[in-house]
Amino acid sequence: MFDRISSQRVVVGNKVAATADSNMKQHKRNARPVSRAGATPYHRAESYVPQAKRLREFKWLIYDNNGSYNGWFDWLPIWMRVGYFSPFVVVSLIFFYSAIYWCRPRPLHFEAIVYETVVSGKEVDYFWDTIPKTAALDLAIFLWGIIVVVYAKITLGSIGAFPISFTGWSWLLLSMRAGIEFAAWVATSLDYLALGKRLAIAGSSLRMVAITNACVVCTIWNLILFPIIYFFSIKDGEKRRSFLKFNFGFFMTNIHVLNFPMAIINTVYGSQIRLFTFSDLWVAYLVIMLYSIVYYFVMDRRGMHFYPIFCPRSAFSVGSIMGVLGLYYYLFLKWNELMMMM
Image (cartoon, rainbow, N blue to C red):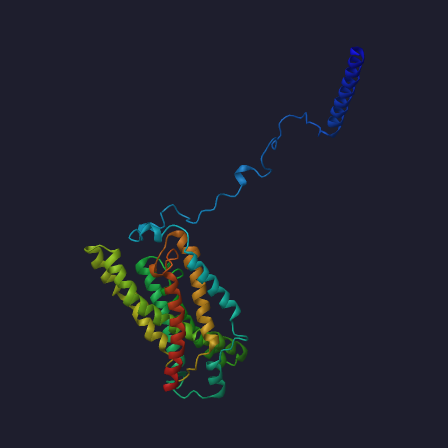
């Protein structure tokens, strides 16, 4: 009996050994060949992309400045300069940007007032019987706008604030509007009718945004931002007196005070005014959208916070954003009421 058991064990053992040997041979056949060429540049590498070429970790702040460019905004709390945007602000911006796309008037329409006036011969007020008063005023506004920019370059050493500040955008827009409509008059008078009409339409499309931006800049700076900066961001003493002197100097008086009456001419007051339409309102909102992209996604990353009431890290900024949009619509209605009274 023990012999039978022993023989069975031998048979079973032989079967197990044979099975193991078969599995080993199968494993060797399936195994990938091992390179004998030694280490290669990619030997046991985690990725075929060299480590030096991998994308760096994304950081919101471009400079390591705690969200305060050159220390200019140290007076703001750190939470207003660094951190995630408020979800309420994010949702409001998405809603606003989407509305700009979906609510665009189709087609956009702007009356070519300058072109139509020249072609019809309705212009009657001339300076020296050579140039209409409206064209002369537009030329004066355009040239004065250039003079102020040149003055800023000479006295301040830079005009870098113009493309990044809403005040700068406002000044450039009102100067551009006047320059384009003057060019439209010149082109139409010289019988370049197609060019004159295009220029007239382009200048006309900037009328409402020019007057409304100037009104908002003049009001918000003088009644809100200037007091905040003067009393809270600058300590009492020589710096405060210097800032007060600078604020009432030639440059700041032009871009924050004279900008409003300059923008009124030939937009809501003059012989060639026209009522604004929803196309004009859409252009004004488009400019706000474009500047908000610059402010929130370019300047914020550099630590520039010119307008704390629009801080993206505070849910209360939603009220500021909606307030500005509502103000533009209110002014849209009021400009038309004013022009209908004339």
